[in-house]
Length: 89
Image (cartoon, rainbow, N blue to C red; front, side, top):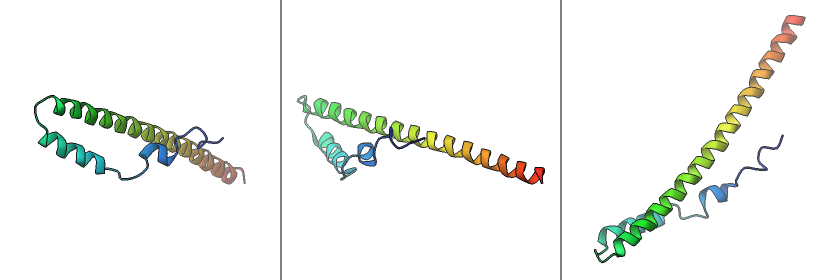
């Protein structure tokens, strides 16, 4: 069973670098922005970026949970097999 074939790559999950740099710039502009409608547009952009971040985090958590579940299942089967070998001797 290939688990990595359907999972997103590291780059797809976390982007291409400079993580957090853009967020700091957006916060600074939002705080300094004027009330001529520019700030509401910038706020919408920040919310969209945050939403995309949550989607990525959810995907990473889902993949991680699947790996833990699979690993636990394999581990339990191994322990059962070891016990059966010991009992049958």
